[in-house]
Amino acid sequence: LFFPGGNIGDLAVNGTINDLACSGALPIGLTAGFILEEGLEVEVLGAVAQAMGRAAAAAGVPVVTGDTKVVGRGGADGLFINTAGVGVIPDRVDIGPQRARPGDHHLVSGNIAEHGVAIMSGREGIDFGTTVTTDSAPLHRLVAAMLASVQDPNVVHALRDPTRGGLVAATVEIARASRVGVELDEASIPVPETVASACGFLGLDPLQVANEGKMVAFVDPAHSEAVLAAMRARPEGVNATVIGRVVDEHHGM
Image 1 (cartoon, rainbow, N blue to C red):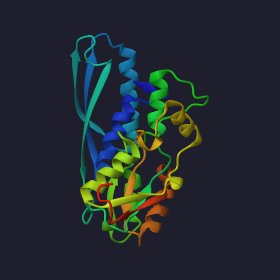
Image 2: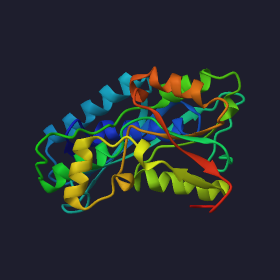
Image 3: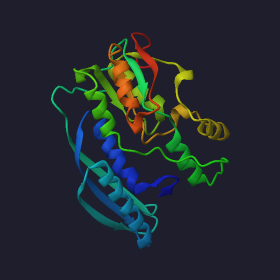
């Protein structure tokens, strides 16, 4: 429930905001359903709810309705939170996993795999010699800046937050939906040294480790420099970079 840099409350808010943002939508409200295990400490619930409120306020996206249910001991691993979100897609914005095209540049908004390593360090009680904190953050303002950086927002073809399955899963999902191939330049993918060391210790590939505050973007190559500059001008995208391109070969891979 708690991990370096955050907890399940702010994670629930940011995760749903980012699902909306990756469809090009401006989030306007969230729901929150709490499933509480019998015996959960009130202090734990309070800390999670406060984190959720702070995250929603910081993002400017209110939690507008919710509900609670209590289940027996052993039925919820302490606490589950179910969130849903509503947003509005601006005119002329058409973003979807099926829209990647050969020639598109493949961008990532920053360092990858930080969240997954933060979770594993807390869950397994492993000390990597330094603290790796979650990258959990709302990305709707980053997406708005990307779309505002070009006259035609349709040059941003596809967006995805690389959560479960990491960068590879998100990239493959879009490659399959668009029936294209993607070539990655592994040396260009930003993996912090601490994360690389932790993944090496655990026998994991950082390209397959979850993120909660990063996104991948497939952008028309004629406009990728403008979009990249807009990303780097935002704190959520300061380490954004081009990591590959879309090709008309090995479709879905």
